[in-house]
Image (cartoon, rainbow, N blue to C red; front, side, top):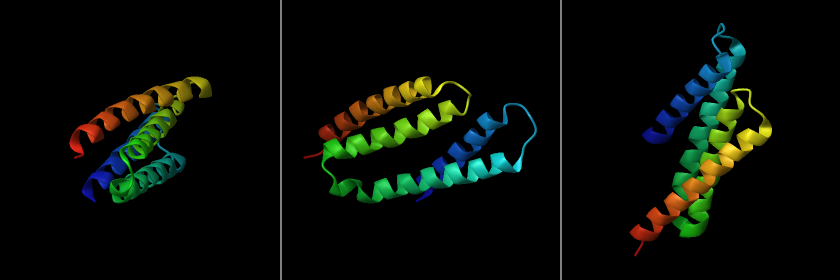
Amino acid sequence: MGIPLVLGIVYGAYAAYIARGGGPASYGQLALALVSGALLALLILGLLRVQHSLPREPRAAAWGALVGCAMGFLYSLTGHSVLLSSGIGLALGVGTVIITFYAFYMHEP
């Protein structure tokens, strides 16, 4: 329970930091931090609760989708194009799928 909460807080704070862009803080950035951090924490918590009932391929794909979407969203906050943000998210998602599949494959009986 603690790890998703900490990751959500860090993710939300970093999203607000990126959106701030060196200007003054606003309530919109606070809302962005709260919503994005809470959503990521809930998604991680939900995936942690159901991951053991999934076979290793869908489990790795779920982690890859979660990481890819989260990082693509953070990259989109920097003001780059949607295509570049999608490409960064896809690359990180595919890398996460490969790494998590290998880890799940090596640690399952």
